[in-house]
Image (cartoon, rainbow over all chains, first blue to last red; front, side, top):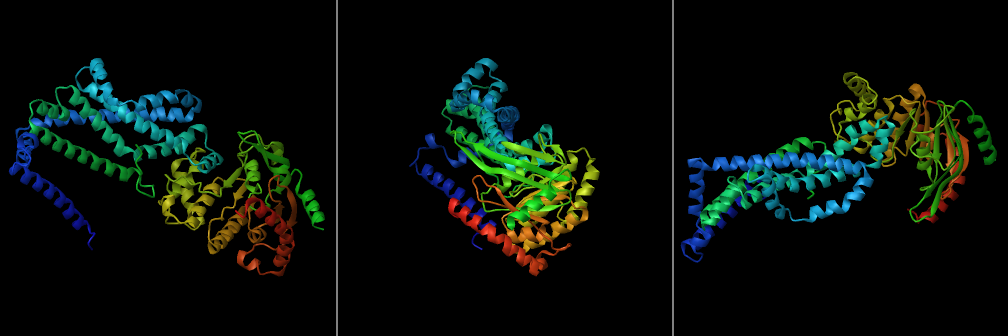
Length: 259
Length: 281
């Protein structure tokens, strides 16, 4: 009984209450100077003000559009190239060191280049997100095609499948299942790409909001931006979980995430 | 005496009427380090149309390898495979193969798994589904059509597999220890189901197992293989027990026990050799 769902939620809320309470006490007693740490009340009223005045919606919209575009384009490219590589092992072997090299590169360093090439609008952020999402999806689809069970494959052949039918009925579902199992990671990376891109140079978005507040030592603004961003990411994550439950209905266990 | 029995059986089943004929088939594998391993040496075996033949041998003797050659999944290093008199060049399109390991498509429901063989052959989707549902009923799985494989028990998955293969109406049925991982009772039930389905249209069956009792109870003829490497066919015995048979009852008949004793006498030495080589694994 102690582990019921209601108890869990109560405990989860309690953690937040304790943390915020501690923060409030420490800043109210000046143990932590409010200039550097702001106060819960300031942060909260800032968030309320953004929503009441409606200024936040434009930024949320921009970040959402960038994230969605980065996710869709990155996933499509990753799936196609992953599939292609898995079906052409020699090509994969030739390009392997370059794939590893680009994947090892911290993508943040590309942000200024993208800004230079694509300007300060949304496309430089989308490009940054794509470079992050691409590799997650690419590796998963590649693995998914490679790890089709030999028995299932032999069975498909014996049941009379042509090469094209194998693609459709065996390789593609297997690759998709791996891709879906990495959905949380790739969606998360799409948001990271968008926000980091905004932070490094833009005129709108949650990253821009946080960066602007930082520029004028407005700690309450920074924290408020982080709070809105966290809720935004949680909402998207919840959506992904719902989609995942529908798509992976044939899977016995909770999907494993591969980064 | 054993030798004589095997020779006459061989002579009788070879010839043009054979559904599957393996002629002096040798299968070797070459490894990356250059060493070679001969799994099966000089195996000659024929299955007549409508005949149920079992291959029995100790673990690791290359039974599955031989079956893969008959399926066209593996090309022999030497020797010939003929299917209804035609040399086999690529995949054996007239054979259905029931695998030992899980071979169902995990992302398809039971009925989709059964219907897939018709779908890929261009049968209209509605007809394929109707026929698949009919087959699920025949293997005793009505009401399980929309389950995914992981929601079914091991025995139920084997039933789906059987329906998946039989719906295409192959003239030859290749079975690789299909009931191996099942418990004793389920094996018996599955064996009887197989015999019932087989009785309906008498396909040529090549059935691989390590279980001699199962082999005798099911088959018209039992082929014994020696322990690997370079496994050979040691001999074959005709099973003259009347059909239709019930797996549980046929094992109680004196003729069954006599035959079992006779074959086991030969098989035992090979099983012990096999254990000595694989360390009992």
